[in-house]
Length: 360
Image (cartoon, rainbow, N blue to C red; front, top):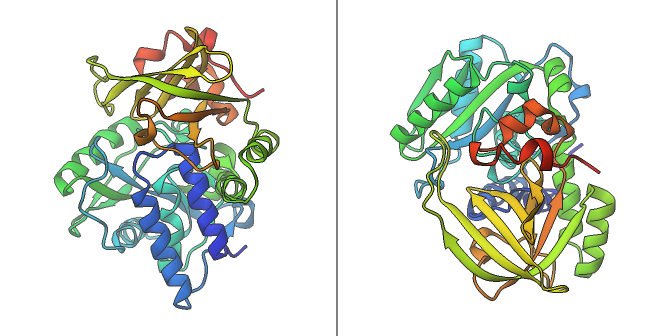
């Protein structure tokens, strides 16, 4: 199907919802470039199911990988992913027939649309996470034993590299180092595989899911109606309205190789006055109510503004502000013992076997 301009806008909203993005500007920038190309008469992004491709067709993920910090002020010129995809094709001596997002959330959900338009390739309605994780090896492909490479990376000043690497954790370290040298981020094309392997191991329908979520949140419905639609359509299992009472940065270090900036937020539930606590380390990791875990990664924890259902960000966690905390399940594969271990920082591993919850 051809995505309309409205679909692109809804995708951006759904991507922010699933990421609780701290920096929506990068999503907005990608969206604006896509819409500008469409307004200038370029063919709209094409979204295909993986079943629409030949089983042996080569597909690949595209996404920004940063150096462990927020994306730098060095903005993309717009052709970095084209360079990476073309470099990967040259080295593999095979045409890449479709592109899919490295993560079905945040800015990386928008990348294959723009890159696909530039290269004349479709976007595949799948991804390896079904949400966003901070590390590229936190992928269902890693659980399935698939290699992350070979991969190609291009930096903000046009430098490129091709890496013959297979093991996803090794690929993580190498690409992060490249991102540091490039100036803060790398436009990366990775996880080349057949459509057959993507269908077997990926999260299918994850791009259209973001469009569906965005359509709900962008509508003129009341906040209550939006909540009900999210429950029916997306399996949202809990929405807690609470006021921020305290925000504290924590001194504990992040595990080696993982993004830092941990913090803890205490809120007071509006209806019953219960204490709600959020643990954050680059993303919302844990939600507790009166000291008992209510949701823990890989659960998706995100936030909305109560007045109109707009997506909130980490910047909205200021004392006195009231927010709707939303919990929905991740892809079922993340609730296996192996998936839980791969998804969570070491600091939460003790909670996962007994307290983590799967889809209900």
